[in-house]
Length: 144
Ligand code: HEM
Image 1: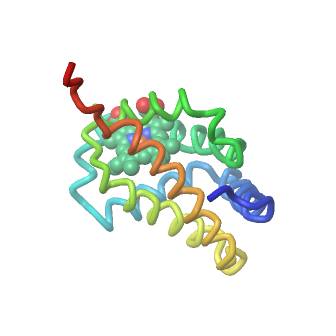
Image 2 (image 1 turned 90 degrees about the vertical axis):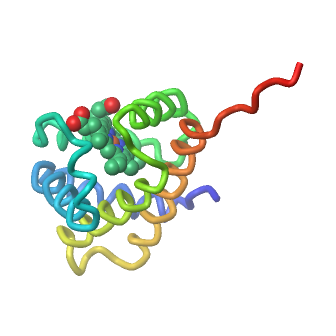
Image 3 (image 1 turned 30 degrees about the vertical axis):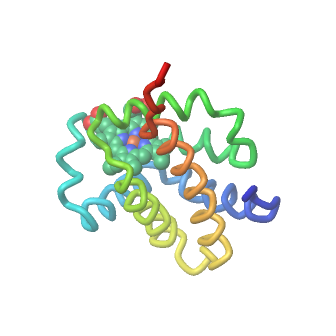
């Protein structure tokens, strides 16, 4: 379901806070992710500081268009396909969503409201569903 204006605002406001401390935010996100599932660490082969910067910048783009993800479809499809090549599985998306929300909560603290948490969960779910369905669902072979 589409995000309400209020949900989008909660997402933008909370992302603004962590984007002022991007490096710390990225580090905390990966720390949370690898604590939850240490095996995922092996998928990351490039420099983690650079990877963190790329992640935060892409998230910034997505957050800016969070009520208009249709506009990002080509970008999201390419991103999702590259993730297949990185060895990411559909079920990994949930862990990333949890690590992301946990990072926001860790860094924003008490100011990260339950409403903001719910808005992120809803938005991430929509994002992940789109990425997963574009990258992992294969067309049935034609019977003609
Ligand atoms: C849902 C939103 C996600 C976003 C916005 C995102 C963003 C990015 C970006 C910007 C890159 C840099 C390379 C590129 O652009 O292709 C990247 C690489 C990567 N991402 Fe994600 N990602 C997401 C989900 C995930 C998930 C669910 C996993 C699962 C563990 C994951 C694991 C990785 C890995 C392994 C790499 C390559 C790292 C390397 O080259 O060392 N990402 N991601």
